[in-house]
Length: 509
Image (cartoon, rainbow, N blue to C red; front, side):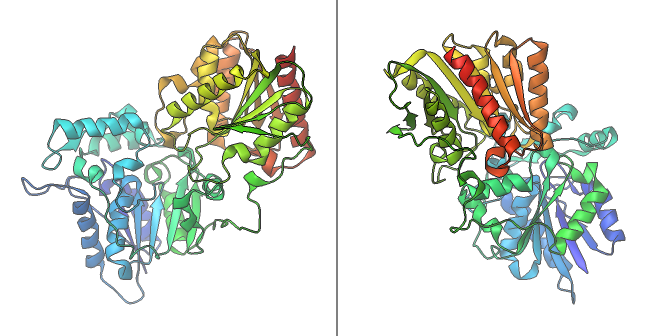
């Protein structure tokens, strides 16, 4: 028999698991939903500090109470914040745990508090303000969100109104010490089998995790171990409320070790982002200065227009080669140089979804330096953004400078995905496009884009058309995200040619 120990996230108690637990029990499993101290109606003795260690102890108590019945396997399931006490307890009872299931959660690290997993800057600042206003330990709590603010902690997609009402009614203030105390791990649980259940409606997917592994994110390399599997649920961040039956089925599969296994980085094979550019382009020598590479046109006379290519992200700071050396970007830059335009690639510091402000500053600084180069016509510059750099387009559309002749974007993410939290208001292209005026816009849309990213594109295009913006869409009906590296087809090549011709026409006229 499998014994599931279910641990819920912020503000929530064991009640959120009721429907899923009933379905697991009906399937023959034993189920224990943990009541974390201070949540779900449980209260500590007066004057007791509640921190992460308190919640680790809560999970340990349940593991010990389940015991070691013959043939029984203990599977720990941590949702959201709940993965932190789960991992802490597994580290101390590794011999008693068969598998850990990460349910739409982060990857806790030794010495890092749970607050670090909160991507929304406003929520992190709210926690820190609450800690400053009260006593960090005794009684200090964070108030639960209002009914219409739960989505700030994760997408409420597909959650019925009645379930959202109940979630709000049963929510408890969350003890601040549990979010602020660093997790302590010995490494004893590192070898345990694990499964990740990703809720695609919250912006996560197996494909995205694989891409992050491919670009070399250090904390994710262990996820390519054969003992690690991944499954997806097409719903938001609260699957126990939106899809309890599907969640129960998925948890049973995870417990059995089913699911997708990631492909490890193979030194003998090129990951997708390092494959050769899909077009034959001239071998134009580059000139490197700090974080900028210039590809001047061969035998150019006089200042020439410049086309600056802005890579997506987030990209780990340790990724090598850095994006300006990725073949897709160097290929575009050489294509531009072959048509008499200075191609430009650069590295910026979008290493996490909290880095948009400094990435924007990096891009603005790079563009200013490019325009100051005597070989560049400072009055004829175009910008081309990719993927996760989409929010950076808002700065340029909101107040387009007269020298910006065109702005293009390939398979862009045009609004924060649900699991990103809120960005600064300046990084919302759908709001900025109303001020784009006559600035020509070119958007390359991948027909096989993930639903969550595609929704941000459609929101942007609706706003663009409503405001009368000059936007041309180049469709790649059978193209995936980053189609230039994945779909080496005539359709993809034709889309690149069409988009480049359009941008070059606006830039050189």
